[in-house]
Length: 277
Ligand SMILES: Nc1ncnc2c1ncn2[C@@H]1O[C@H](COP(=O)(O)OP(=O)(O)OP(=O)(O)O)[C@@H](O)[C@H]1O
Ligand SMILES: [Mg+2]
Image 1 (cartoon, protein in one colour):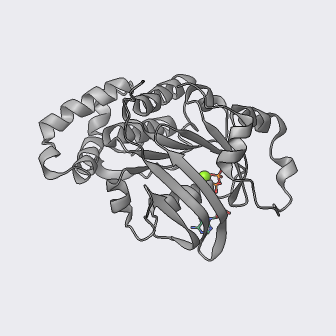
Image 2: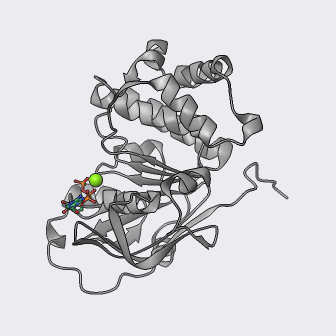
């Protein structure tokens, strides 16, 4: 019998989630189940609510959940602070990473890392620097970046790479990657994809990958591709759905979506078997 290296199984379940921001209703009944080692791609028009979904899962205080639930391993996390969600293994790579002048990359990452560790595993500066150096090499980032202020003056692609550096340092259970591919050049995309794949293979990371383009999905292979329109998932398939959307665009989806979508996993099983890692 095969023994999985990633014996642990974590499950993030979003159940009929309705949410608003600034009194604007954005999420209209999102249901999604994401398990360890799975990659779920989320594609959909600008303004459909993809970033809102990521922010609500991460616990951004500006967003109001009106209905539904978010569960991590069967337990509702709706009342958890963002810090508690991060400690439980949730990670959000931002579409627009914030610039933090005055705080170096290494200081920021060490503080974030230590906050998520029990006391005995917290790292002093020199020990953390060695780990950071190794991770930066993996992501082909010049070591000088460690002492620069976080995202301050970073190019678009450098900011995205820095998000992945943070992900690889914190080693979450579930990552929400919000358009991490946008702004990356072709080589950087490969490096970032490889970093993500390593985490999936080594730690059983589960990924919700928000993207507008199938390109990254050729490197980080999705188990499911969800089409997100007007605040909910209206169709689920495999890589074929991503390719189809690139060809046809979203034009035919402009009309309001009236019918409840088919449950995501059921629809996906019909169209596509799980792809090899
Ligand atoms: N703080 C806010 N105040 C008002 N409206 C907001 C706020 N945040 C998001 N919205 C609105 O919610 C809707 C969904 O935005 P969201 O950023 O989630 O879309 P998206 O699918 O991520 O789009 P994109 O593909 O362009 O990143 C948009 O109409 C947006 O203007
Ligand atoms: Mg967005």
